[in-house]
Image (cartoon, rainbow, N blue to C red; front, side, top):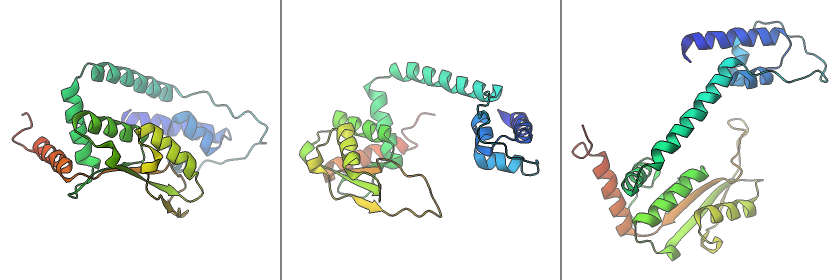
Length: 216
């Protein structure tokens, strides 16, 4: 959106604040963080209104345009990726492991709180390597107070790994001074204990990152 776009958003934020809209309402309309809105309107006089007043704010044109562009890029992304074959998926998995996978010798390890990342890794591992499914293990990292039973069921279905192969979950105590959000299903770590497979994967990672292999 550029610098001018931010100036427009700041001006609109100040207008809405002067009309007694809350920081949350303004942030929602403009598609920006509450902290940014707070900074922009810190010197605008704010008079709270009765809570029964309408809270709906019509979407800002820039926010609508941003959502439309994101939707269009998602559509284009699907079209481009759908044309790719196994070789592209193979290379993508190597890159994924290079960034997020475990590098310690002895086991192929991948941990993430994003279900899509875990699902992609599991498909890649099974598709391109001879995996003994009975040796795959899962361990969850979940904040205290969240439903462990539901989390295990969720990750088991997603990764297609039976719950009998789940280890004892690590229950973390959240520090309210540094974070408020908690991932509902926690973080899942997939471990495939096979030194040979791990060395094969790491060989591919080193090859992919090698200047001798990369084009250009």
